Length: 433
Ligand SMILES: NC(=O)c1ccc[n+]([C@@H]2O[C@H](COP(=O)([O-])OP(=O)(O)OC[C@H]3O[C@@H](n4cnc5c(N)ncnc54)[C@H](O)[C@@H]3O)[C@@H](O)[C@H]2O)c1
Ligand SMILES: N[C@H](CO)Cc1c[nH]c[nH+]1
Ligand SMILES: [Zn+2]
Image (cartoon, rainbow, N blue to C red; front, side, top):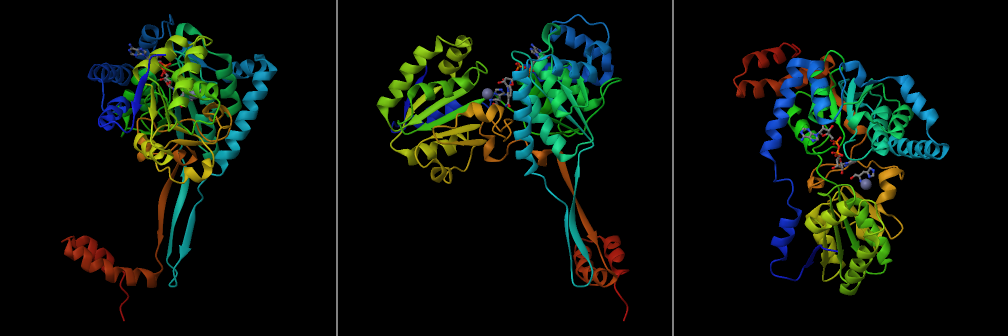
């Protein structure tokens, strides 16, 4: 299988690795321009523009917005219609994801100072959240759960879901997952127009406070452009996996773990790092044999050719150093003592510990969220979680004594800034002897 072979000992390794993993710098101006036009169209013409763009980009033939609304009865019907095995799997996954996210819930807190002054933080859920579930090239029921359940756990007032239905087809499991997760409203909208509808609101689609969820380049660019009008979770790029293996895992397992991300997208990135040169060759052999057994072979081959790599390193310490540099969305540690090695990982969206933890289990049902920072943004951002749907307000409640003593600190600071009204407002509270 065509892919890039690198050796970390080579003089030009750093430059080659940087070129291979550079994605975030490439912002397509043509896409940005097109998305700007779509956002403006929806902001100015509302539902009419949504119908127009949906017909054009999702190859549909609808004449009014009500044809893009999926009501609760349709969600319940899909839930009743899907095979029992699918329903049970969705429910089991939902239970696990819900249970994991319950742990993330932040509570309000406060403390009182000796003079009676109260200081604290009040945590509140968002009133209304918009979740984008991708649906252009594949359907993602698992992404419905991963986006909606943390919002539900946070106590969000209303969850509005958008997901495209190319040629009018929407997957039953997506609808069933929306029913299980408790989505309040669903519109078959995708791309920049869906993001615009959530950000600005239209006659039919309510404006939300924050938009979360992954999507293609149009979705990512639209989220970037509406940020500020609404909150967003992150700007997600194509899926990534980095596997660090000591050479002792079955090479077929590792080849398939790499493919599990490569099959998402031609632009997805799958990289294997190992100190064992022979093992890298065995995995390459497994990849060649196994690719031919997969429906998405062409996507996998394209992804491995353009963005994949097999990297030989000196030892596992160097492997982890490279993993920290790449800051991958998913990092599999297919090695002995994975828990110990994980302590050295500083940057990764999710860390999969040991040979029996393929990334695919995290995608569907382990419990943690599968919406993760990509393109090295794990250096500064975190998985989607309950905290994305909660916000914090500071609480300050001064007792008369507390106000008097704080005013004595505030007054000279305010006068130092030449803000006399601030100073005098504080000074009114100073107790006269
Ligand atoms: N990070 C995660 O958790 C996660 C989960 C699932 C999927 N993904 C990723 O999300 C992405 C999904 O992409 P997708 O394309 O399948 O679905 P998508 O729903 O993100 O995008 C489809 C929409 O793109 C718009 N579009 C397509 N071509 C256009 C054009 N030429 N001009 C304007 N708009 C256009 C259309 O409106 C269409 O509805 C993939 O990269 C996949 O790997 C990520
Ligand atoms: N691996 C994707 C996130 O990068 C999530 C997903 C959904 N379905 C399968 N996988
Ligand atoms: Zn996946």
